Length: 117
Image 1: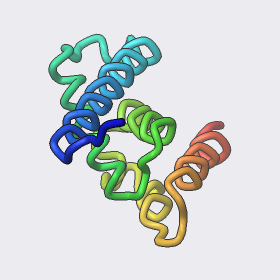
Image 2: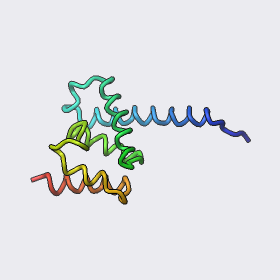
Image 3: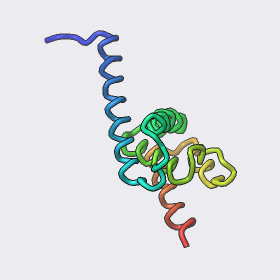
Image 4: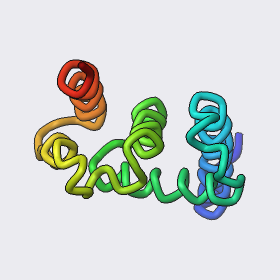
């Protein structure tokens, strides 16, 4: 039996995050090929990293939920969470007693039922 030291746990966490970021970038590139056609890999990686940080601010931390948050960034703009053009997102994302999963569900419901003709 062995014990992981703090720096080993940090390295493990960092490795897991990099793998998630790579998968997320590949998924975004696949699902949003046309929207991301002019975006190079480095720019997409930066979008994913900044999106992970922004999602965390709103309590969106689960892998599936963060992936959905990233999709909203691509679909509605990198700053969809604060843009006046997408003002509908702010009250959903800042709801204080709502889980990250519920926030992503509410964003999905809004974009499906309110924004679509």
